[in-house]
Length: 280
Image (cartoon, rainbow, N blue to C red; front, top):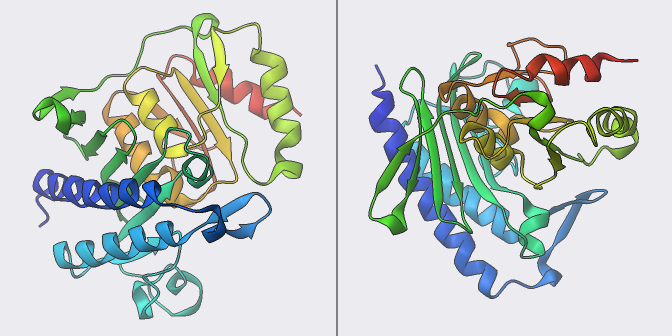
């Protein structure tokens, strides 16, 4: 039996160590080291180095767990993200790791960017940790334990999180722009046409993990994005739910952990976002 609270706190320290590595590398980072994975989708040695650090530490913490990782550095037998497709049975318990969420922001020295780590058992998220590197903010939650924000620089002060109570007409929404621009254009145009001028305002922050955490702490009231990876949203989704919010996929299903879309809100405005998404 995993002690989820102690596991979460241990993951917070791992995320902070990865964040410290990323912060130091940014001081000497060169655009020459950037690689293009797909159109407008970038990676660098920093993403890969952070992932190796995280995977090594998580293997020590929970040796029986497998991995779903963005950069594939954990690809060894049934521990790899590819094991789901190519290597037979997948471990029931898996770490879901984004070693640097918001790589484009990182490249341009534009906050926020973060480390995101979740523990997934089947379709249930047990642990979620997101460490925002620029502001030194660690958001975390474990199943049934609530959601929290800690600033290490403030001598370990921890705040319990709760979503906002804003109605749609006053809501601050985050409507992100995924890399699959051609497929997503009709949806984002519909969302902006419907909400621009009819809500408090609209933002784009460039990090799915952080958009979710901002919903959890009430800085945002709602967030929607499609064509993203599970590593982008898995940790943040638990943090939103443990803060009293609602998370579904674009179909409105709460069974979102195998998909590529997320709608996360304070619960009050969830239906308003979904109804616009559903319009043909």
